[in-house]
Amino acid sequence: MISGKAPCGVLYAVRRSSSAVGYCALSTRCGTRSEDGFRLGTAHFAEHTVFKGTSRKSARVIGSYLDRLGGELNAFTTKEEIVLHATVLKEDLSKASGLLLELATCATFPEGEVETERGVVVDEIYASKDTPADDIYDRFEEMAFKGHPLGRPILGTAESVRKISTDELRRFVSGRFRPEAMAFTLVADEDERKMEKAVLRMLDKFFPGHVAGDPVAGVAPVAVPLDYKAFDAVHKQRNHEANAVIGNLAPSLYDGDERVVAVLLSNILAGPASNSVLGEALREKNGWVYGVESSYTPYADTGIFVVSLGCEKENLGRCLEETDRQVRKMQQTCMSEPKLRAAKKQLLGQMAIASDNGEAQCLSMGKSLLAYGTIDSDAAVRSKVGAVTAESLREMACRIFDPSTLSRLVYL
Image (cartoon, rainbow, N blue to C red; front, side, top):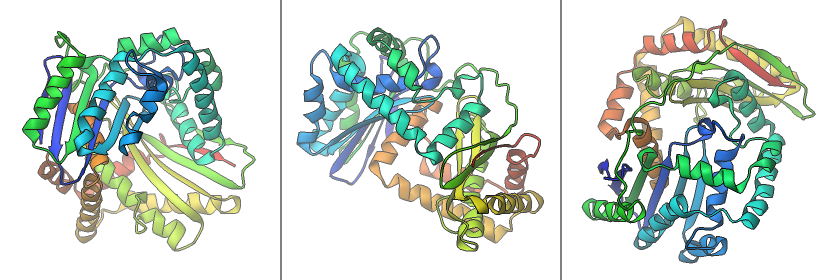
Protein backbone atom coordinates (compact mmCIF):
# COMPACT_ATOMS: atom_id res chain seq x y z
CA MET A 1 0.00 0.00 0.00
CA ILE A 2 1.12 3.56 -0.74
CA SER A 3 -0.33 6.59 1.02
CA GLY A 4 0.44 10.27 1.09
CA LYS A 5 -0.86 13.82 0.89
CA ALA A 6 -1.38 15.61 -2.42
CA PRO A 7 -0.22 19.24 -2.76
CA CYS A 8 -3.87 20.34 -2.71
CA GLY A 9 -4.33 18.76 0.75
CA VAL A 10 -6.24 15.58 -0.13
CA LEU A 11 -4.96 12.51 1.68
CA TYR A 12 -4.78 9.42 -0.52
CA ALA A 13 -3.99 5.73 -0.36
CA VAL A 14 -3.77 3.04 -3.03
CA ARG A 15 -3.60 -0.70 -2.51
CA ARG A 16 -3.05 -3.52 -4.96
CA SER A 17 -5.55 -6.36 -5.02
CA SER A 18 -5.82 -9.53 -7.08
CA SER A 19 -9.28 -8.89 -8.49
CA ALA A 20 -10.53 -7.84 -11.91
CA VAL A 21 -12.73 -5.34 -10.07
CA GLY A 22 -11.52 -1.92 -8.98
CA TYR A 23 -12.82 0.27 -6.15
CA CYS A 24 -12.52 3.96 -5.43
CA ALA A 25 -13.90 6.20 -2.71
CA LEU A 26 -13.89 9.89 -1.88
CA SER A 27 -14.45 10.43 1.85
CA THR A 28 -15.11 13.90 3.22
CA ARG A 29 -15.30 14.97 6.84
CA CYS A 30 -18.62 16.80 6.72
CA GLY A 31 -21.37 14.63 8.12
CA THR A 32 -24.35 15.53 10.25
CA ARG A 33 -22.25 17.15 12.95
CA SER A 34 -21.09 19.69 10.34
CA GLU A 35 -24.57 21.15 9.85
CA ASP A 36 -24.04 24.20 12.06
CA GLY A 37 -25.91 27.05 10.37
CA PHE A 38 -27.89 24.65 8.16
CA ARG A 39 -31.18 22.79 8.50
CA LEU A 40 -31.31 19.24 9.84
CA GLY A 41 -30.62 16.71 7.10
CA THR A 42 -28.65 19.06 4.84
CA ALA A 43 -25.58 16.78 4.74
CA HIS A 44 -27.62 13.73 3.73
CA PHE A 45 -29.70 15.71 1.21
CA ALA A 46 -26.49 17.11 -0.30
CA GLU A 47 -25.13 13.57 -0.64
CA HIS A 48 -28.26 12.64 -2.63
CA THR A 49 -28.30 15.70 -4.84
CA VAL A 50 -24.65 15.92 -5.92
CA PHE A 51 -25.67 13.12 -8.31
CA LYS A 52 -28.34 15.30 -9.92
CA GLY A 53 -26.17 17.24 -12.32
CA THR A 54 -22.75 18.83 -12.72
CA SER A 55 -21.41 21.55 -14.96
CA ARG A 56 -20.36 18.74 -17.33
CA LYS A 57 -23.03 16.05 -17.02
CA SER A 58 -26.80 15.87 -16.58
CA ALA A 59 -28.48 13.71 -13.95
CA ARG A 60 -29.42 11.21 -16.66
CA VAL A 61 -25.83 10.92 -17.91
CA ILE A 62 -24.51 10.54 -14.35
CA GLY A 63 -27.07 7.84 -13.62
CA SER A 64 -26.00 5.72 -16.58
CA TYR A 65 -22.30 6.65 -16.74
CA LEU A 66 -21.05 3.62 -14.78
CA ASP A 67 -24.14 1.45 -15.29
CA ARG A 68 -23.31 0.99 -18.95
CA LEU A 69 -19.85 -0.24 -17.91
CA GLY A 70 -21.37 -2.78 -15.53
CA GLY A 71 -20.24 -0.70 -12.57
CA GLU A 72 -21.96 0.74 -9.51
CA LEU A 73 -22.04 4.26 -8.09
CA ASN A 74 -23.13 4.88 -4.52
CA ALA A 75 -22.83 7.13 -1.48
CA PHE A 76 -23.70 7.37 2.21
CA THR A 77 -23.74 9.90 5.03
CA THR A 78 -22.77 9.34 8.66
CA LYS A 79 -22.56 11.62 11.68
CA GLU A 80 -19.05 12.67 10.63
CA GLU A 81 -18.59 11.79 6.93
CA ILE A 82 -20.03 11.89 3.46
CA VAL A 83 -18.61 9.14 1.26
CA LEU A 84 -18.96 8.78 -2.53
CA HIS A 85 -17.75 5.45 -3.87
CA ALA A 86 -17.77 3.33 -7.00
CA THR A 87 -17.11 -0.23 -8.14
CA VAL A 88 -16.04 -0.96 -11.72
CA LEU A 89 -13.82 -3.21 -13.78
CA LYS A 90 -10.23 -2.20 -13.11
CA GLU A 91 -9.77 -0.80 -16.62
CA ASP A 92 -12.58 1.69 -15.95
CA LEU A 93 -11.25 2.89 -12.60
CA SER A 94 -10.01 6.22 -13.96
CA LYS A 95 -13.51 7.01 -15.28
CA ALA A 96 -15.07 6.17 -11.92
CA SER A 97 -12.48 8.19 -10.01
CA GLY A 98 -12.96 11.20 -12.24
CA LEU A 99 -16.73 11.00 -11.79
CA LEU A 100 -16.45 11.01 -7.98
CA LEU A 101 -14.25 14.10 -8.04
CA GLU A 102 -16.53 15.79 -10.58
CA LEU A 103 -19.56 15.22 -8.34
CA ALA A 104 -17.72 16.69 -5.36
CA THR A 105 -16.41 19.77 -7.18
CA CYS A 106 -18.83 20.54 -10.02
CA ALA A 107 -22.33 19.73 -8.73
CA THR A 108 -24.92 22.31 -9.88
CA PHE A 109 -28.06 21.24 -7.94
CA PRO A 110 -30.64 21.89 -10.70
CA GLU A 111 -33.89 23.11 -9.15
CA GLY A 112 -36.14 20.53 -10.80
CA GLU A 113 -33.87 17.60 -9.98
CA VAL A 114 -33.56 18.74 -6.35
CA GLU A 115 -37.34 18.93 -6.02
CA THR A 116 -37.73 15.40 -7.36
CA GLU A 117 -35.07 14.04 -5.01
CA ARG A 118 -36.64 15.87 -2.06
CA GLY A 119 -39.61 13.51 -2.34
CA VAL A 120 -37.27 10.51 -2.36
CA VAL A 121 -35.52 11.63 0.83
CA VAL A 122 -38.79 12.40 2.64
CA ASP A 123 -40.02 8.92 1.73
CA GLU A 124 -36.75 7.49 3.10
CA ILE A 125 -37.43 9.29 6.39
CA TYR A 126 -40.93 7.85 6.65
CA ALA A 127 -39.65 4.37 5.73
CA SER A 128 -37.10 4.48 8.56
CA LYS A 129 -39.83 5.48 10.99
CA ASP A 130 -41.79 2.41 9.89
CA THR A 131 -38.82 0.14 10.73
CA PRO A 132 -38.76 -0.08 14.55
CA ALA A 133 -35.30 -1.67 14.77
CA ASP A 134 -33.80 1.28 12.86
CA ASP A 135 -35.96 3.98 14.42
CA ILE A 136 -35.25 2.94 18.01
CA TYR A 137 -31.50 3.06 17.46
CA ASP A 138 -31.71 6.53 15.90
CA ARG A 139 -33.96 7.71 18.74
CA PHE A 140 -31.53 6.29 21.32
CA GLU A 141 -28.61 8.24 19.83
CA GLU A 142 -30.67 11.43 19.67
CA MET A 143 -31.50 11.06 23.37
CA ALA A 144 -27.95 10.12 24.41
CA PHE A 145 -26.43 13.05 22.47
CA LYS A 146 -29.18 15.53 23.23
CA GLY A 147 -27.95 19.11 22.71
CA HIS A 148 -24.77 17.91 20.97
CA PRO A 149 -24.07 17.97 17.19
CA LEU A 150 -23.93 14.15 17.25
CA GLY A 151 -27.57 14.12 18.33
CA ARG A 152 -28.77 15.39 14.97
CA PRO A 153 -30.67 12.79 12.92
CA ILE A 154 -28.73 11.86 9.80
CA LEU A 155 -31.81 11.94 7.58
CA GLY A 156 -33.16 15.11 9.18
CA THR A 157 -36.92 15.44 9.53
CA ALA A 158 -39.55 15.56 6.82
CA GLU A 159 -40.27 19.16 7.85
CA SER A 160 -36.63 20.27 7.69
CA VAL A 161 -35.88 18.53 4.39
CA ARG A 162 -38.88 20.17 2.74
CA LYS A 163 -37.36 23.58 3.59
CA ILE A 164 -33.77 23.01 2.42
CA SER A 165 -33.12 25.25 -0.58
CA THR A 166 -30.80 24.66 -3.52
CA ASP A 167 -28.77 27.65 -2.32
CA GLU A 168 -28.25 25.93 1.04
CA LEU A 169 -27.07 22.77 -0.69
CA ARG A 170 -24.58 24.73 -2.79
CA ARG A 171 -23.27 26.61 0.25
CA PHE A 172 -22.94 23.40 2.27
CA VAL A 173 -20.97 21.57 -0.41
CA SER A 174 -18.76 24.51 -1.36
CA GLY A 175 -17.96 25.21 2.28
CA ARG A 176 -17.54 21.64 3.54
CA PHE A 177 -16.10 19.73 0.56
CA ARG A 178 -12.59 21.09 1.09
CA PRO A 179 -9.49 19.23 -0.12
CA GLU A 180 -8.02 19.44 3.41
CA ALA A 181 -10.99 17.46 4.70
CA MET A 182 -10.90 14.75 2.01
CA ALA A 183 -9.39 11.30 1.56
CA PHE A 184 -9.24 9.52 -1.80
CA THR A 185 -8.66 5.76 -1.84
CA LEU A 186 -8.27 3.11 -4.56
CA VAL A 187 -8.05 -0.67 -4.48
CA ALA A 188 -7.31 -2.47 -7.76
CA ASP A 189 -5.05 -4.99 -9.45
CA GLU A 190 -2.68 -2.33 -10.73
CA ASP A 191 0.88 -1.28 -9.95
CA GLU A 192 0.67 0.94 -6.86
CA ARG A 193 3.13 3.53 -8.14
CA LYS A 194 1.13 3.80 -11.35
CA MET A 195 -2.09 4.25 -9.37
CA GLU A 196 -0.46 6.89 -7.17
CA LYS A 197 0.66 8.92 -10.19
CA ALA A 198 -2.83 8.70 -11.69
CA VAL A 199 -4.41 9.87 -8.41
CA LEU A 200 -2.06 12.86 -8.14
CA ARG A 201 -2.75 13.88 -11.76
CA MET A 202 -6.47 13.65 -11.20
CA LEU A 203 -6.41 15.64 -7.97
CA ASP A 204 -4.35 18.33 -9.65
CA LYS A 205 -6.92 18.44 -12.45
CA PHE A 206 -9.89 18.95 -10.12
CA PHE A 207 -8.12 21.21 -7.60
CA PRO A 208 -5.84 23.22 -9.92
CA GLY A 209 -3.48 25.53 -8.11
CA HIS A 210 -5.04 24.79 -4.72
CA VAL A 211 -2.47 24.84 -1.94
CA ALA A 212 -3.29 22.89 1.21
CA GLY A 213 -4.51 25.10 4.02
CA ASP A 214 -4.79 24.27 7.69
CA PRO A 215 -4.44 20.52 8.27
CA VAL A 216 -7.88 19.10 8.88
CA ALA A 217 -7.43 15.38 8.29
CA GLY A 218 -5.68 13.49 11.05
CA VAL A 219 -6.59 16.05 13.69
CA ALA A 220 -9.59 15.56 15.95
CA PRO A 221 -12.30 18.24 15.57
CA VAL A 222 -12.69 20.65 18.44
CA ALA A 223 -14.52 18.72 21.14
CA VAL A 224 -18.03 19.92 21.95
CA PRO A 225 -19.03 19.47 25.62
CA LEU A 226 -21.54 16.66 26.02
CA ASP A 227 -24.01 16.90 28.87
CA TYR A 228 -24.97 13.23 28.93
CA LYS A 229 -27.71 12.16 31.31
CA ALA A 230 -28.72 8.50 31.64
CA PHE A 231 -32.35 7.74 30.78
CA ASP A 232 -34.83 4.89 30.99
CA ALA A 233 -37.72 5.50 28.60
CA VAL A 234 -40.62 3.47 27.23
CA HIS A 235 -42.46 4.51 24.07
CA LYS A 236 -45.75 2.90 23.16
CA GLN A 237 -45.78 1.59 19.60
CA ARG A 238 -48.33 -0.35 17.57
CA ASN A 239 -45.88 -3.10 16.67
CA HIS A 240 -46.14 -6.87 16.90
CA GLU A 241 -42.83 -7.14 18.73
CA ALA A 242 -41.05 -5.19 21.43
CA ASN A 243 -37.71 -3.53 20.71
CA ALA A 244 -35.11 -2.49 23.23
CA VAL A 245 -31.76 -0.71 23.18
CA ILE A 246 -29.47 -0.44 26.18
CA GLY A 247 -26.19 1.41 26.06
CA ASN A 248 -23.80 4.06 27.22
CA LEU A 249 -21.10 6.44 26.06
CA ALA A 250 -17.89 4.70 25.02
CA PRO A 251 -14.30 5.45 23.93
CA SER A 252 -13.77 7.88 21.06
CA LEU A 253 -11.77 7.42 17.87
CA TYR A 254 -8.78 8.86 19.68
CA ASP A 255 -8.91 6.77 22.83
CA GLY A 256 -6.33 4.35 21.49
CA ASP A 257 -6.14 1.03 23.31
CA GLU A 258 -9.56 1.49 24.93
CA ARG A 259 -11.17 1.61 21.50
CA VAL A 260 -9.76 -1.83 20.63
CA VAL A 261 -11.01 -3.23 23.94
CA ALA A 262 -14.51 -1.91 23.19
CA VAL A 263 -14.46 -3.52 19.72
CA LEU A 264 -13.53 -6.91 21.19
CA LEU A 265 -16.08 -6.61 24.00
CA SER A 266 -18.84 -5.84 21.49
CA ASN A 267 -17.89 -8.84 19.37
CA ILE A 268 -17.84 -11.19 22.37
CA LEU A 269 -21.10 -9.90 23.82
CA ALA A 270 -23.35 -9.89 20.75
CA GLY A 271 -21.27 -9.85 17.61
CA PRO A 272 -22.30 -11.43 14.29
CA ALA A 273 -21.30 -14.99 15.26
CA SER A 274 -23.92 -17.33 16.71
CA ASN A 275 -21.60 -18.21 19.60
CA SER A 276 -21.68 -14.66 21.05
CA VAL A 277 -22.61 -14.50 24.72
CA LEU A 278 -26.07 -13.03 24.17
CA GLY A 279 -26.62 -14.89 20.91
CA GLU A 280 -26.25 -18.19 22.74
CA ALA A 281 -28.22 -17.10 25.83
CA LEU A 282 -31.18 -15.39 24.15
CA ARG A 283 -31.52 -17.17 20.83
CA GLU A 284 -29.73 -20.52 20.77
CA LYS A 285 -30.61 -21.63 24.31
CA ASN A 286 -34.04 -20.06 24.89
CA GLY A 287 -35.36 -19.02 21.46
CA TRP A 288 -36.56 -15.68 22.80
CA VAL A 289 -35.21 -13.54 19.94
CA TYR A 290 -34.54 -13.83 16.24
CA GLY A 291 -31.47 -11.66 16.64
CA VAL A 292 -29.57 -9.63 19.22
CA GLU A 293 -26.81 -7.23 18.27
CA SER A 294 -24.09 -5.28 19.97
CA SER A 295 -22.52 -2.30 18.24
CA TYR A 296 -19.77 0.13 19.14
CA THR A 297 -19.43 3.34 17.15
CA PRO A 298 -16.52 5.68 17.93
CA TYR A 299 -16.77 9.36 17.04
CA ALA A 300 -14.19 12.14 17.22
CA ASP A 301 -14.93 13.23 20.78
CA THR A 302 -16.92 10.32 22.23
CA GLY A 303 -18.45 7.00 21.23
CA ILE A 304 -21.54 4.92 21.83
CA PHE A 305 -21.91 1.25 22.76
CA VAL A 306 -25.34 -0.40 22.53
CA VAL A 307 -27.05 -3.76 22.70
CA SER A 308 -30.27 -3.95 20.68
CA LEU A 309 -32.88 -6.69 20.40
CA GLY A 310 -36.40 -7.38 19.23
CA CYS A 311 -38.69 -10.05 20.69
CA GLU A 312 -42.26 -10.99 21.46
CA LYS A 313 -43.63 -8.61 24.04
CA GLU A 314 -44.09 -11.33 26.68
CA ASN A 315 -40.37 -12.21 26.37
CA LEU A 316 -39.03 -8.70 26.83
CA GLY A 317 -38.61 -8.95 30.62
CA ARG A 318 -36.81 -12.30 30.30
CA CYS A 319 -34.47 -10.91 27.62
CA LEU A 320 -33.53 -7.85 29.66
CA GLU A 321 -33.00 -9.91 32.82
CA GLU A 322 -30.81 -12.44 31.02
CA THR A 323 -28.83 -9.67 29.35
CA ASP A 324 -28.24 -8.08 32.73
CA ARG A 325 -27.18 -11.46 34.19
CA GLN A 326 -24.68 -12.14 31.41
CA VAL A 327 -23.23 -8.64 31.68
CA ARG A 328 -22.78 -9.01 35.45
CA LYS A 329 -20.84 -12.23 34.87
CA MET A 330 -18.50 -10.35 32.53
CA GLN A 331 -18.10 -7.57 35.11
CA GLN A 332 -17.37 -9.91 38.01
CA THR A 333 -15.13 -12.54 36.42
CA CYS A 334 -12.22 -12.24 34.03
CA MET A 335 -12.45 -14.36 30.91
CA SER A 336 -10.15 -17.39 30.95
CA GLU A 337 -7.04 -17.21 28.78
CA PRO A 338 -8.18 -19.98 26.41
CA LYS A 339 -11.53 -18.23 25.85
CA LEU A 340 -9.80 -14.88 25.40
CA ARG A 341 -7.42 -16.33 22.79
CA ALA A 342 -10.38 -17.85 20.95
CA ALA A 343 -12.27 -14.54 21.04
CA LYS A 344 -9.27 -12.67 19.65
CA LYS A 345 -8.79 -15.20 16.88
CA GLN A 346 -12.46 -14.97 15.99
CA LEU A 347 -12.32 -11.17 15.73
CA LEU A 348 -9.12 -11.21 13.69
CA GLY A 349 -10.65 -13.83 11.39
CA GLN A 350 -13.76 -11.70 10.85
CA MET A 351 -11.60 -8.66 10.14
CA ALA A 352 -9.42 -10.58 7.67
CA ILE A 353 -12.46 -11.89 5.80
CA ALA A 354 -13.99 -8.40 5.71
CA SER A 355 -10.74 -6.91 4.40
CA ASP A 356 -10.77 -9.46 1.57
CA ASN A 357 -13.72 -7.45 0.22
CA GLY A 358 -12.22 -4.72 -1.93
CA GLU A 359 -15.06 -2.28 -1.36
CA ALA A 360 -14.91 -2.67 2.43
CA GLN A 361 -11.15 -2.26 2.29
CA CYS A 362 -11.39 0.89 0.19
CA LEU A 363 -13.95 2.47 2.53
CA SER A 364 -12.00 1.48 5.64
CA MET A 365 -8.85 3.07 4.24
CA GLY A 366 -10.67 6.36 3.70
CA LYS A 367 -12.13 6.37 7.20
CA SER A 368 -8.72 5.68 8.73
CA LEU A 369 -7.06 8.46 6.72
CA LEU A 370 -9.69 10.99 7.79
CA ALA A 371 -9.45 9.98 11.44
CA TYR A 372 -5.72 9.44 11.89
CA GLY A 373 -3.97 10.58 8.73
CA THR A 374 -2.53 7.07 8.35
CA ILE A 375 -3.56 3.43 7.94
CA ASP A 376 -2.49 0.69 10.31
CA SER A 377 -0.78 -2.34 8.80
CA ASP A 378 -2.32 -5.77 9.31
CA ALA A 379 0.51 -6.57 11.72
CA ALA A 380 -0.24 -3.45 13.77
CA VAL A 381 -3.92 -4.38 13.99
CA ARG A 382 -3.07 -7.91 15.14
CA SER A 383 -0.69 -6.50 17.73
CA LYS A 384 -3.33 -4.17 19.16
CA VAL A 385 -5.92 -6.94 19.42
CA GLY A 386 -3.33 -9.28 20.91
CA ALA A 387 -2.53 -6.74 23.62
CA VAL A 388 -6.08 -6.75 25.04
CA THR A 389 -6.16 -8.40 28.47
CA ALA A 390 -8.94 -10.19 30.30
CA GLU A 391 -8.83 -7.52 32.99
CA SER A 392 -9.17 -4.68 30.47
CA LEU A 393 -12.26 -6.43 29.04
CA ARG A 394 -13.74 -6.77 32.52
CA GLU A 395 -13.05 -3.10 33.27
CA MET A 396 -14.65 -2.03 29.98
CA ALA A 397 -17.76 -4.09 30.80
CA CYS A 398 -17.93 -2.35 34.17
CA ARG A 399 -17.57 1.06 32.50
CA ILE A 400 -20.09 0.54 29.70
CA PHE A 401 -22.70 -1.21 31.83
CA ASP A 402 -22.35 0.93 34.94
CA PRO A 403 -25.94 1.08 36.29
CA SER A 404 -25.55 4.74 37.23
CA THR A 405 -24.84 5.81 33.62
CA LEU A 406 -26.48 3.05 31.58
CA SER A 407 -29.46 4.14 29.43
CA ARG A 408 -32.37 2.14 28.10
CA LEU A 409 -35.05 2.79 25.49
CA VAL A 410 -37.94 0.40 24.90
CA TYR A 411 -40.57 0.34 22.16
CA LEU A 412 -43.52 -1.58 23.54
